[in-house]
Image (tube, rainbow over all chains, first blue to last red; front, side):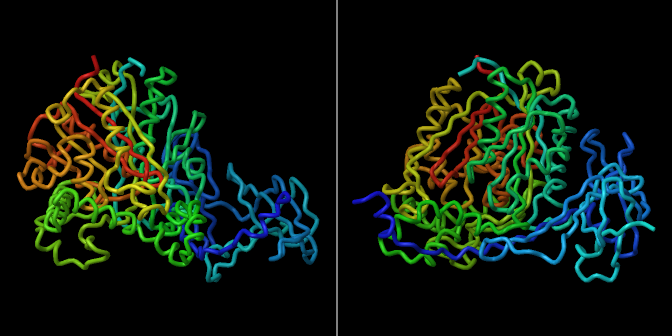
Length: 153
Length: 409
């Protein structure tokens, strides 16, 4: 038998596999989303070291203290780093062009010590650029409450 | 094996219920971890290394330890994940033991958990079974049937139950009795999931027959929960707590792989109730612990028994009696909280099954019974030596740990 010849004889079968996951976002992120519904950007602050987490998290990794102080942050922040996506993956596994580059920015809100990743509307992005959050408090899906960012006036 | 003394100086458990939608994985596990720190009187700065584990694929989060590390105090510390299926928690506890016994670390936090409500445990089980599925195709087995087969956790137990009942004389009444015993114990355990105080075997017998011979009342629930244990040197443990629980030995044994072998319940082509690997692991563990006659020297057992027959079957395979004797020993009352050799005082896996945590919770219960910290479910007799067991892998791995109130001489 020639090399790989046997492969054509191997029967193939598909096993149905359709797992459904439903991750809990957690207590702290729920409070974040509740804030967003009222147009507020809520971050959690470590009472021990003062580090401000946005998105909020329950435990300050550095202190192991419960970051249970809530602070409302302004809508403004700074782009720390970014990328521009030019293609997307098509269902058949090949790349497909998208309409114009889509900008994904890591934004550090004024008063926060951590970054939030989101889409940046409009072009002309640069590191250090001042941006403003675009909130959509009426969004049905909580994950869409923060629609993205755009350049601050 | 290293001669160094290893002891458990703290145990922490989260609340165990079917659905913790209010917290995410990192936050849920934090509950057990922070309880363990408090229990041992330590802080993250006192921990040298972290070992964690849960079932892969069940929650669909495959690096949960990287997500949770900071929530558990592991920032800036060595971190390792161990995952061996249903035995995961036991293997994580063994990892804690190895890390201290080797002399590499003095103080290790071992963490095991499962948040089944986030995921799809049936899909997770399928990912365990699929690797061995190809061989079945040659036999003409329909893949759709296989998926259903791998998905039904009961499927891994029913064939084993039938063969065990045939070989031991265990009756369905014994299965009812085991369930009632465990669920009554669970009612006294604040960290158990299914609490059914006053449950009678007759009531268990009225639950729906799922797959012969297993009724709904003979099966574990699906639980969200976490367990953390502090392993440290004997010397440090004595400084931390009045009465540490010493780990005398650990042993594990992998049998023939059995993903979808005969009934997927033990081994590929031998009787799934024989559990030779459990007997081998138990014998090794007793030998390493210096135990000559486990029947006389073991005071308490926490076998891993998500299904009722397994409490009796593993009692036998842990060499605590002759094969076929366990049903009569159950009838004698010896396995009760006030019995001669209490079994599953925690309420067992049949009452609480946060899968990745379950095999660790067996070790944790033995430790806490030795430490005298079990409150209402504290067994009547004094516990000098206890055996903790886990069953998992591809339903072919058995893990055993022997704990004691005195260090190994």
